[in-house]
Image (cartoon, rainbow, N blue to C red):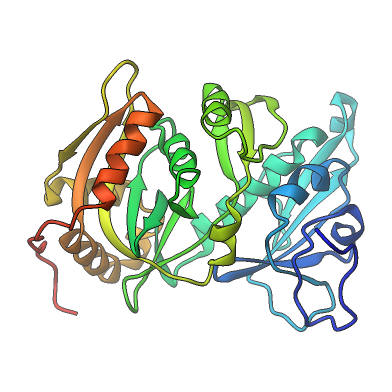
Length: 325
């Protein structure tokens, strides 16, 4: 960061990251993929963790002539729970859907709240719970439930030359079928933290957050190039369903399109809300992508498999039946 204040013109964005002065009321706007998020917080430690992670993102002051998609506040709270230690609450567009948490977990509350907003409020695109990476203008969608190892694999690959589109969401346009980037910090849990630190010693990791419902958590800064290219959509070429399995060699096995279609529905946030449009889009997506199951335990082996995949041409795909538009 080279400056500590906003330009005199409030409508001029800059890459200043977060700081206590800018996050305190009245707050700031930050661009994350296709969204503008208004953020404010009066919680100590909040900006100390997120500032280095978000320093490459475009931000505007509160007075900018913008219409935010979401409003996110992290606020110190009083009440009886303060006797358990300092607490913070998450305010999302004027309401609080979550219980308070201890103050030193405020950055995780912010990240989790933003995930919740994206998962529940975005209906102009088809939303999958998936990591997405890209190389050579072709993207890999990696869906999977928590614990499948997709975030660990995603963090490894983006520190070996792949572009990060998202660790959590594949946002696929109904207009052109392309994927909108949402590069944000990657959340790692437990032993995955040390695996990535050993694999990519130069990566920027937050401090560790102990005693969360997911164990120990740390956040990885998204690569600068991925953030700078956040307006560049990508075309999906592969759907790879990863699973970490101890003590197995990395293996990529072709998966039927019918089974892939079914599993993608299970990983979709808004499939059932959007009806026929989502069925058609998902059918089109599966028809033009090669689909695989991927098992791995060693990250270097996994990276080698994905590098070979990127060097190949996609197989000729057979379409999945879908209704007429």
